[in-house]
Image (cartoon, rainbow, N blue to C red; front, top):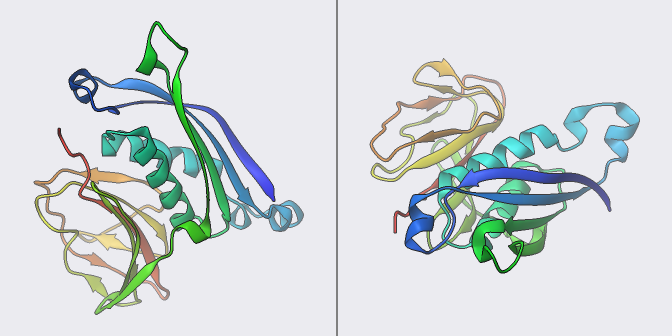
Length: 218
């Protein structure tokens, strides 16, 4: 399988179970290998037929900074599920996450490395009045999903109140509070925010990725 690699992605985020780690950001390093067929893009020159590594970097950084993970094992699992959910060309994802401060003074880093194929995350779909919800992954701390909004349909509210949300438009057209959403721009909102309805005024289905119920404080 062909690979796109992102080497040495650096992110300052909350990750760890110790009290100081819950209060202070620390830097982690990621290595990503994205498995897919690159021949269609290589022969056509169309970025839509490959996986945009700039988008991938933005999405991964947004997830890690939003989620405030306790375990790097959960961080890599959720990031893999997210990438396979929002990039249909991907067939597999290899992720290595290094935590340099974990064994400060004793080792250069502690790390987790995983490989996940699309079959590792079977999607459970539920029909809704506006389209459908695809549950991609549910962990102890968060739910990752795709919301598919049919043409002319409205998503009545953003998410259950009282939980923080990270989301972005994957494909199609959506308005939020009457303003057009820009594709592939992650937006985080706090548990107190209550954005208005989402509407699909386009001619095709729109897909919204959402991570709900993250940022467990303790």
